[in-house]
Amino acid sequence: MRLGRKEGAPGSLCPAPRRGAREGIAMPAGIFRVCLVVITAIVNHPLLFPKENATVPEYAEDIIQKMKAHEENLRLEQLRLEQEIARQEATLKTLEKATKPEEQNNKEPLPWDLWSAMSMVIFLLIELWRQDYQDGNWQESASEEDDMAILGKAFKGVALPDKAALANFYERCILGATGDMARKRELVEGFADDLLEALRSVCNRDADMEVEESIGVGSMYENWRVHKPLVCDLIVPFTPPEPYCFRSQTWCSRESVPPDKQGYGTIKVCRADEDAAGCICGKTKLGEDMLCLLHSQTNQTRRSGEMEDLLCFKNTQYLDADQVMKWFQIAITKSWNKISHKYEFDLTFNLLDSPGALKIKFRSGKSIAFNLTPVVQCEDSDAYFISHFPRSSLMADPVSSTDWFVTFAVYERRFIHSVSKKLPASACHLSCLQILSFLHGKQCSLTGPSSLTNYHLKTVMLHLLQTRPYQDWASENLEVRLQDMLKFLEKSLQEKKLCHFFIGNRKVPEVLNFPVVFQKAEPLNLFRPFVLHRDAYRKTVDTFHEMLRNTSALINEYTVHIPSVGHTNMLHKESL
Image (cartoon, rainbow, N blue to C red):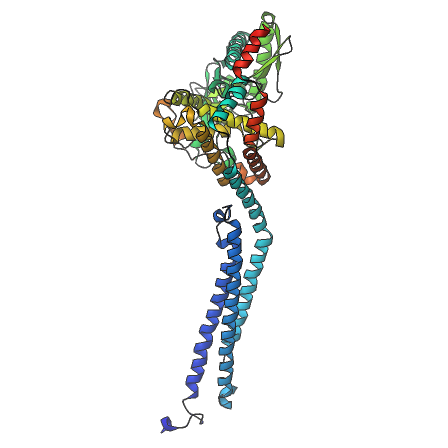
């Protein structure tokens, strides 16, 4: 019988199972090796470890040591497995030699060589990718994470002065520098009202823009400005002459807006008797024998010139910020020429690139600076389109002069005033902001300008005012609340994300009557430019780090060299 043949005899059935066994062993072994190589490369790859963990300063060195030890263990395990597979390969070769010559002549596929080649190719590709990442991108991210690690260590290692020292510093340094804030506001407001009244009288009411009463905004009117000179910011709403009107469109009302145009809008100059879309005669070419019943031919020929007279961009109906700047400067000059004889000082333009940056120069040599900026009201709200405003080094100029930035300065002042009524007496919210603004300004004077602005610092305070209970802002909590602001700012810098307080904030108090369209808009990240400007980001982080480290030294230095407010008043009385 065939089943009784000896092993190895011709035509026996025994060698067939051996061949199947070899294939069954070789195929899984090859697959196992490929999987082992891929898993080993992935485990050794730095992307496996999140960047958030790498930024933890206390455990950064421990994590690196563990990674190296883990990598070494995996390599040893890989060598052991390769030796095991080599022994299996030797066993398979022994079985192959025991087979009959006729079976050796049958050329069977070489799965083991194929899997070995594939394993080596995959391993080399992944290893090259890993080396490239470590030499290139990993170094960039590591340098950025080192900055964040230093930042975290600096904040945890900083020791803020106690409550008594902070209170003494605030009394001597902050109050002493801002004691005459109210007097300067009163002087500037009175002069601005007189200047705008003269402007109305010199302008042609039938052809020129009409200016309204000025509105005080910014740090001087929110009572937290600390840097000298104490500059008052006044905005002046203006409207077109009859029968024209402004129709505005913000970025919120558009379906898709580029990131660089978020926060901007356009202003269209239309006739009051036109609908929002405008007459069709302005969009199509009428034949010679056709006439628009709403607009005569003379109106059609005069429209282009009228739009330019109404400060619009050439051949459009959109208000041009540059044209507004020129008109406002000329109007201010005419107004001052009319009333200059009443005053014993000179008025000059302080900055050439700002339309209303003015300076009052007294004969004694002293001066007072203030900004008078034309704005357009956004619909029926207290949000305004502002023609020009100070920009940080991060903010790029608008793409077109027809793009106007939307400011919520009136709502910001109103929110601070509303919350202040609910806070304890002598609350420390403005004191924290003033101290932080002072420290950052002094640090910038030492290490150079930073992309972090006072508006960013105020935004941090607004967020904390909304999230923390009112009783936490008592005066005895000055030190703790200042730490909260530093922590919030540090976290925002780490994440490169600081949301605008009003845009996208659905928790704005109803008492402010804030427009719903801005509440439902996507939040606007004020730190978004940091993602694009890495050098500016690192400079800002370094400046913030230095400020934290020098906080105690700056406070102690200025407290020692500056006399108290009471002592200053006493010396002033003696001099009189």
